[in-house]
Image 1 (tube, helix red, strand yellow):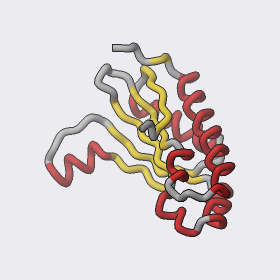
Image 2 (image 1 turned 45 degrees about the vertical axis):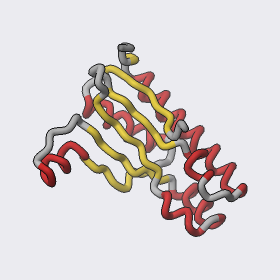
Image 3 (image 1 turned 180 degrees about the vertical axis):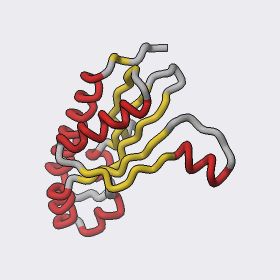
Image 4 (image 1 turned 90 degrees about the horizontal axis):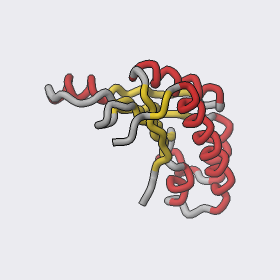
Length: 138
C-alpha cells in the first residue's frame, strides 16, 4: 500500500530541506517540529545513518476543521514530511498521503480536508522539484 507522495531531486541536502520548509510555508503549513534522525541516532545509539529529517507540518485552519469533525484526529497530526538522502545520491522529499492517513478514521466528513491537504502537498513537492534538478534514476 502506498502511503506517501514523493519526489527525488539532485541538490545539497540542507538546501532541499530549506526549500521544502519554504514551500510548506507558501502552502500555509508551519513546521511544528524538525527531527534530525541522523543526529538522534548518533547521540542515542552511537550509530551512523544517512541524513534524514522529519518535518511535522501543520496547517492550522485545516487542522481545526479536521479536529472539529473528528476529535481523535489529533493522534494522526501533525502530517509528516520527510527529507532524506537516497541510495543513488539524490535527496527524497516524501509526504504522508493525507487521504490514506484519514482513511484510518473512517469518517467521510474528513474526505474534503484530506483532498485539500493532498493538493497542497503535491504543490510543495512540485515547488521543490522546480527548484532542483530531478535525481538520476539508478
